Length: 382
Image (cartoon, rainbow, N blue to C red; front, side):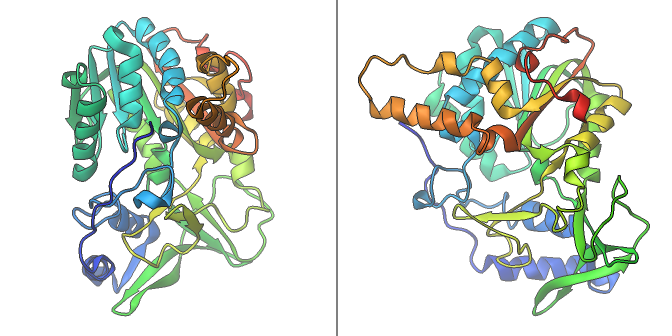
């Protein structure tokens, strides 16, 4: 049986309250905010931001009030496959601790704990959202009661990390800066906040995309200083162990291809997507695809070893996802049919299997033979 979040009401008149907060923030700068600051407020402002209030976010469909589904909600086989890679890295590190950043509904934590068992003495969740932390507690107490006492919650970086770090769809939710090319020069695209609502407004900037290209006039694209800073901070804190991040994105040469002239910024609400982050403030998710080359370079320059980069499909198959499917005994049970459909979505080239990528880092341990990158490694494309 698949669990999903129960509907929870959002704060009354949420967009108006968020607009008032944005007006306060923008007042010292004549009403203008860089987009990354706007994105941080509408996603994470305490009590108001999308991830800070109590509405459902994660689930298999809109009937339960959710906005999108992540891999752990599709099938527990996702977490069980990832656990094989985590187990290998835990053994090499000699530190039986897992750190998950942005644990969402708690589904992945539940799956990893159940699969790792005694190999994981402590499971740490780092999450900014108090409402999500509470939901994670409830889920883990219900699904893995014998192991829930091993879980510890944090709302900030620890001083040091040993063991294995995981992050599923974490990097894409980090605020991005927007750049606009008018055919002659680059501008930083920000938001002019007015009592009638936010609107786009550009300012001259020295910022540039990391590559040069024949950009068509009107191009809008993203740069990712916060995600790259996150990886540099990870490098500072990771004393010994490995880290694995799963997210949708591209290597740099694909990300900044001139044909991708509209950028990758996307909004999600009720399992529908749109490209207008200035509407329905606080009521929908805002994301941007990940530039994995920038992530890899940030980690490498800060002292981490890049141990692999590949598609999610290759990674999960390398971790034995197909072996985890219940055997086909000739009876097409509903549960098995669901698992087969979920696996096809996770690894299919036209589904999550190719759009989603996995990158791995290590420090202080030998993990050149990381299980998830055994076949189909694409590090050379970064």
